Image (cartoon, rainbow, N blue to C red):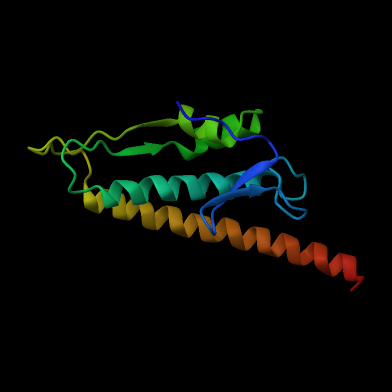
Length: 142
């Protein structure tokens, strides 16, 4: 069982280390970012999951996993934590063709889903950058 860190500790995806929250860290329920902030974090989690599937394409008995993004986002918006929402929307992928070694990763499927998710991540990030730019312009009084 994994221990949950205290609420003032976050995982820094840039360094891979845990650190204390700092002023300026994006909050899950920040009204400025709202749905887009949660969507960006869920897209990032999904990208990691798909990358793990791709990395384990040759691992015997590895079971490909994914989660339903819309279901996870709806759960997060209803008050669940992002991790809980993603875990509850997660499942194992059923392959179109079975492999002899028990691995359920279909590389072409995983690569396509990864690419689609990356485009959606970039779109969400662009929207957030536009939102921040608008707020900065308003703060400068331009």
